Length: 286
Image (cartoon, rainbow, N blue to C red; front, top):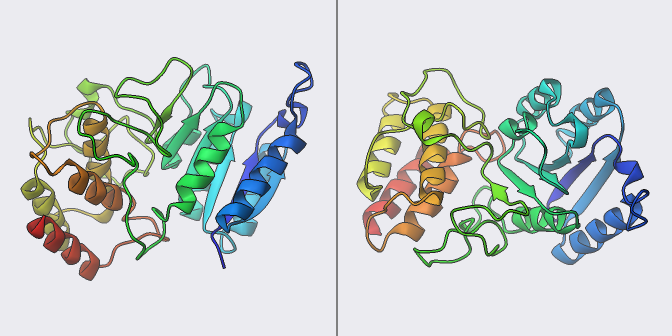
C-alpha cells in the first residue's frame, strides 16, 4: 500500500477561481488525485470553512494516514490548528497558493512550507516530497535539495531557487529565524519541528561531520533530548540553506543526516538508539 495522506483545504478555497474565472477547487482536487495515483499514494481530501471541522478531521484520521498536506488559507494564524498538528504527531507540509500576508502560525507545526504564485504547483510539489520517502522510516534518505552542487541551495523537487527565495514565493523548512535569533542559546523546552523562531544552535563558522557526530553522541548520553537534537539539526539545516560553510566535499552527507535528525523526534519518523548509532557510523565513513 502506498503512502496515505490527509489533504485539508481551509476557508474559502471552495470559491477558488470564482472571481478570476479560472480553475476551481474541483480542478485542484482532480490534479491532486491524478498525481497521487501516478505516485502510488492514497488521498483523503476535505475542505471546510470551519476551523473545528478541520480539527475533527485531524483527530479522526490520525491513525489512518502517514502525513498531512494542509492549506490553512485564512486560518494561517490559527493556534488551534497548529496545536492539532503538533498533537497528532504526523509529518505535515503547509501549502499555500500564494504567500500569506503575515507569517503563518500553522507553519510552526509543519516540516515544510511550499508557497506558490497562484497555480496548483505547490500542492503537487508537496505530494512529490512525501512520495520521495523522506518521511518514511528505513527508506533511502534523500536530501531536500535533490542536487549535490554546493553553490545552489534548492527546495523540494529541484526548485531553481537559490539561498534567497524567489519573489513569487518559495519553500522553507518551517518558519525561518532571523540570524540574530538563530544564535540565541537553546531553550531546554522541546520545540516543534516547524518552529524556527527560537532555534537551538551552536555558534560555529563551519559545519562538520564531527560536530553532528558530537550532537548525536550527546543525545545518546542523555545530554540532549530528542526534541532538542531535532531543533538543533533543523537550525543547522536552515543555516546551510542560508550559506553556512560546510566541511569540504561533505555537504550532501551533512544535509542528509541533518534532514533525518530534524524529523527524528516525530512519532512516525522517530529514530531509535541503534539508528542514531548507524548515523554516527555513516558520518565516520563519509
